[in-house]
Every structure is written in C-alpha cells, then in structure tokens.
Image 1 (tube, rainbow, N blue to C red):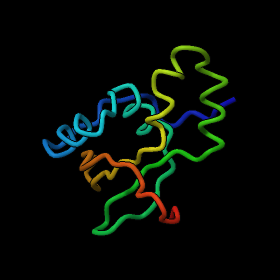
Image 2: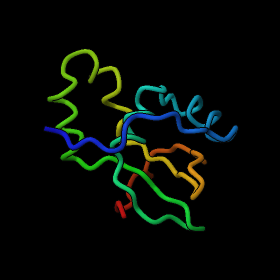
Image 3: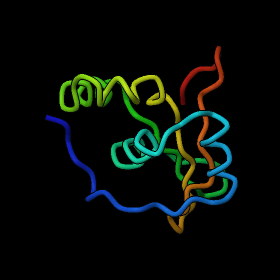
Length: 101
C-alpha cells in the first residue's frame, strides 16, 4: 500500500513552472502525483526538490493500474523544485549521465 502524504492540494505554480511543464510535456496529473508523493530533498537557495523513488513508482503502478498509470508513467521521472513558501518554481527531468542526488 502506497503511503499517502498530506491530502491533495492545489500547489501554486510560477509562470516559469507553467511554461516548463508545457515545454517538457508534463501533464497536470503527473505534476500532482509528483507533488503529492515526491520525496523531499534540499535544493539550492533553501528550496525543496521533490522526486519519486523507484519503490513509490512501483506502488503507484499497483494502486493506479492500467490506463491511469500508463498515461503518466513516462513523466514520473521528472522532479519539481518548490520554494519554501510552497510555490512550484520549475519542473524538469534529470540530465542523462548524471548520478541522482
């Protein structure tokens, strides 16, 4: 059973984050999943980096199943940078060839 974080909420997104999510084809459903289940890590400037662990992705596959999971599966490797005040600053994918921190 996947461990739930806080109840789903609306995360305000900066203009930059909205543009990046469109440019990188990260749909709102994948963004909400990432924000709700992502593991927090410290990011530069006091921000928080949220990304999904492989175990969490496996649990989501079992919980969502079928088409719901397939619709966002390829986007779940993205990460979000969130400010201390709770604004989503940007959404991106890890660079290829770089170790995950």
